[in-house]
Picture (cartoon, rainbow, N blue to C red):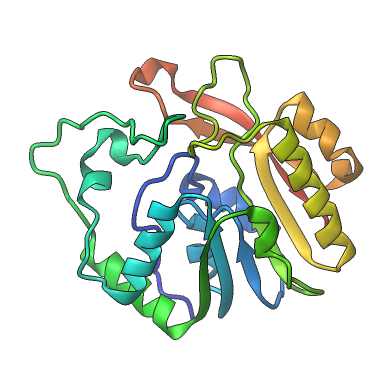
Length: 239
């Protein structure tokens, strides 16, 4: 039975908490091991609470936080909860670039969530990795479930924070991810991917057009509240 206190312990740029009601509709009914190569805030992983799980992220500081939550839940995340909109993001120089928030009495951390997450990690067959997304699923096989939530393809030339890591994620990386998606499909895995609803992504995944769904997402990353709003995203599956 899942624990309702097991949930993301930090806000993450592009996190999927608000979209869970839509994403949940498309979970596979049954699966074996769960993989999330771009875990970020982990909303889907925490929602599923699988008994076997492999999570990965390019951001070493982030995966270190997951290790800390697992191994030392008394370590709390002050910076993430006291910056603007509770967000974590880095620029092209790998520098944290979220402004300070105006909270005078910030709720620094939800201790119940931290403890619940720590217990879940320790009661679960979990592997926490840092690095290349193409390596994470090397042992994935028939019946496993992989969810990709990569840095999104930009919706405009001014969309400068689509990466959330310093390495960038351009057309070459998006194409490499598509190739991995196809490979996992051929292995008999359940594969799901989120991304921007832009021409590049629709072209790359045109063979999965019948199992591509458009969902509405809130754009929350803007200091000007008037510039936040609904945008189209795609949810692409092979099943």
